[in-house]
Length: 67
Image (cartoon, rainbow, N blue to C red; front, side):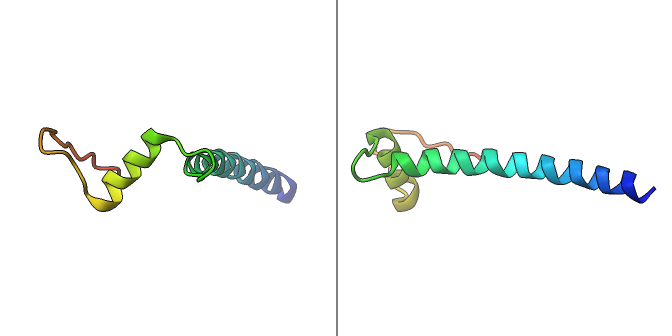
């Protein structure tokens, strides 16, 4: 009985680990795009707009609720 519970817990932890590794890879990709040596202009503009709350006068901004 204990062995079965331990196996189930191991499976859950493995699933969590896989999810966290995927999230880490996504964050690492975003960070790489912000690297000063290889900065992506689109990523920079997105961050500037987000952090500074910047938009052009001829643009319509739609905010997405990220729940």
